[in-house]
Length: 416
Image (tube, rainbow, N blue to C red; front, side, top):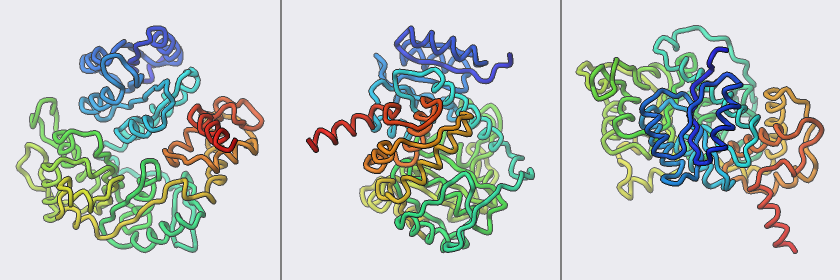
């Protein structure tokens, strides 16, 4: 059997490590295990892994620290966090810091496999997109939907909501897409900022050129500079060959910078120079290269407040702030709850080859009242998990995750 990917499992529960390791090996993965954060990080340094599955609660360090370290060593690594505490705040935080997904205990092997398989497919897409020649390759025409009211074309993989709060966002997208303005997208984690950025790109004159996305939230200043501008061989330890940066890959198209407020002061200065002069140098290089990109940035934090506090360059803020859009959280989009529940279930049915008919009415009421702190990302994961645990028929509240069950319990307690 051909090895699909190499997976490192970091968990201080020895039995859990053995269980996951044997299960994934049967499914075609090569695995290794470590029983502490420090040993896991060392093993990751010594060997090459594509995917890391890490328990959040470890004796010597928590999973977030492991995540950050792994991303520093190899930014392309897929990291999946396991938590036995079902704390959505932890889940949102680790995803913000670059985790691909999270899984709650008690672990269900098929659920773990589903997330790992999805991670592997995303990794393969990312590897294909990172090749310098990829933008010039012809790609199959993607089917689009069209919204007449806002004059927007959007991907069939995305549900265009109908709630009034998000309709205002679509109108703004329709207005700004055809310009060359830089755009700041504000919104909580999981509200779909990258989807909106891509929709702006796909409705712009640059739509036939590349759309390149970069998460600025997890990279050190050295890696951020390399990812943005590229580097030449020998520029720093580990630079074993020349590498094109995101500006180079996005030339002619759109560069999307997520969590831009996390960039260091040094990288912000380099970024300002590139935007002003439309030229860049690879790290360690001397040649200046022309570049033409539209920049869209996203932030959970208000960049105006950030520059007032000295955390972000004011001149860079004004370069970005030619147009801004604020995405509403899911809890303010009540009219979109049922359509998204159906949309995510249809996708889960296709993914799992199931024929689940829908939801128990009680589940729909729970979905409407739950505040969704993780927004659309959390909603999607809840539905995927529930579908995995529902062989057929209707999804009922017994298969909802712990944090939602706890919320319902607390709500019922307050009413009584």
